[in-house]
Each structure stands twice: as C-alpha cells, then as structure tokens.
Image (cartoon, rainbow, N blue to C red; front, side, top):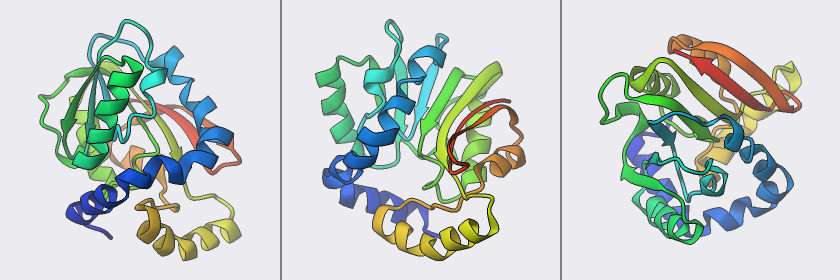
Length: 204
C-alpha cells in the first residue's frame, strides 16, 4: 500500500496533467454527478476533502464559503487558480485527511468526490472526517468502488496495482464497508453507474 509521502509525490507529479487525463470521463459522466452537490451542501461550516484541482468549485451553492484541503501542494496551486477564475469562495489548505488539523465537531457538511480511492488508510481518513463532523452533520461521497460481482471484483483486484501506479487511485476499495468500520451510519447509498460508482450520504 502506498504511503502518504508516495501518494503526495504521485499527485504532485501528475498535477499538471490531471485535468487532461480525466477530461473524457469528466465530460461523459463525472460533471453531471458533481452538479448534484449544489442541492445538498449546506451549513455554516463546510469542508471539502481532497479538493484536487478544484473541479467542484463551480458546483458550490451560492453564498457559502468552503474550507478545501488536499495532500498535494501542486494540486492546490491549480485549485487556487481555478478558484480565482470561477469566483469560488474557498479557503485552501495543505492537509492530510488522515490527520486533520481541525478541532472535534467543526463542520456541518463534509464532502469528497473520488478521494477515498487514493487515501493510504481510508478507514483512518474516514474516522478523522467523522471526528471533525458535528452531531447532526453529514458526509457526502461520490466514489468508485469494487463491484460486488465475483468476476468483476476479481478483475478489479488484478488491475488495481496498475491503476495505482498510473493514477494513484485504487479501483477495488470497499468504501461502504470502510465507512461502517469508521463509525459512520449510511443513510443513502445510490448506484450511479452499475454498482461501481456510488453516491453516499452518511451521519456520524
């Protein structure tokens, strides 16, 4: 399993190419799913984990300010430029989701899109997110996960080392199970693309 340092270095290395690499999937699938954030992100204190190059900025509801964190400083540089271009109200910080520098019970809504596929220890990261989520708050995830089919799951397991090396993303993460291990209660689990891409809402 890649370490935090290796994950940071990998995303620093591909930051300049990241948006171009994902452009086909972004246009075909991801962008419409991201726009759903406009209707569900709410509260006074909001956190986006794994802000990346800022692909969600155009989906922020009007009138809110978001705290956005990411492990990679080079991804954050690109996010800062996009925030200026999009006029997004976001406070960016370099931070590891596995060790968040926020007090307990800070945020009303926390969200992440295609992030916990690349966190070295996803259960630890999800537990940290739960720590900083207020009682009555909500976690929103858009994630790709390991399919339940035995054959597809086996293929994803076989291909996973290659995808990690190329993009930093694991394609065989069991995110719903990881959420439960971290103490979250799943309230919504919706399949968006077969059972590989999911929209998940959870409460601490």
